[in-house]
Length: 431
Ligand SMILES: *Cc1c(COP(=O)(O)O)cnc(C)c1O
Figure 1 (cartoon, rainbow, N blue to C red):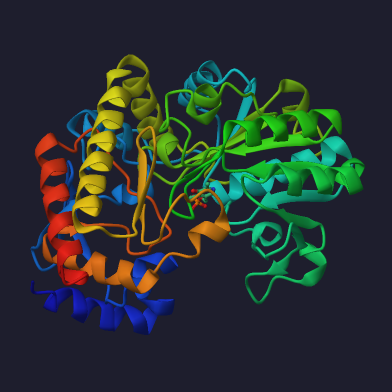
Figure 2 (cartoon, rainbow, N blue to C red):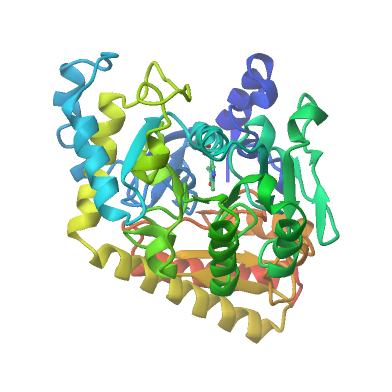
């Protein structure tokens, strides 16, 4: 595979952009390769500047549940652009969009649009702190909620640890109020609530963790969070930036039948445009300016192009629930194919899947916690990534990410992937 042009662009990119990329995972560092630069994409296929075609399992990290440059999605976009790209004054499509999300989620009475998932979680926490008049927040090891300071906290071992900043530049003061608990571990969260439940403003969680590979929250764990937060009058925030409109139309809250107090969205609700949103009960959302005193604003929030693409995506998903059935059946097919290969080759590799979210860990299962996840052989994953890339399949360039499927992925794509998976594993394990 020739990547001459990508390599040239990368060389120049590194002179002008830190690491040559605008988001770290794109640098392909954890798989030991130089990144490929993308020229265009269509359906389930993506093409680099060198003209190589890949079957894409990144799908922009989630937003493109209908695949790349979907005809239905593009239809009408040009007319929308011609009417102007931003006004900074209200538009009707913002209301239509808000109604769609509120209709889909039992627990969401009102919603505020922002520009990224990071902004959504950051703002939701501010509101939760103001509402409860408390300062502490709880997050879980291995859960990612964007890169705002108070959430950039590393996990530690032990039942519970006070955060150590994951990044220089995040002051100890800021993360003093962030408590880190173990994912899928009821005891660790019960301990924290017993000790300081009346200081905790909010518990934020990915109901299905999608940023340490794919690790589904156990129902008993999520139910325990619901019960504890209710008892101690803390706000339960579900970060559904990935799971929202992906696990099901009503997201994780539909699948688990649990209502959060606040919910964060992003990715799919922007249909490939920069978007985030946070919402919840009216009483809580009434805290937000200009109704309440909690300040939160955005020059481009509710941008008409983003709203157009998000609205189209949600409308399509709403009217075609078969899209979910179809994506789930493809994920199941991948799961079975991968497991057959792993068994045939007798390897310690674990496939985690919930609905349409799937991931392959280079570690022995079961994988339910962050501790389980980090046992994965990331070097082997790098080798696997390269072998799959050679076979024109583009996986997430890091072990701790899930595969993203779209309605554009065909049965043929899935079969090709299963076959490549067998060959790749056989090669790297010399079987
Ligand atoms: C992607 C993601 C975010 C951050 O969203 P950005 O738009 O990248 O800021 C937050 N939470 C979860 C669960 C995510 O997957």
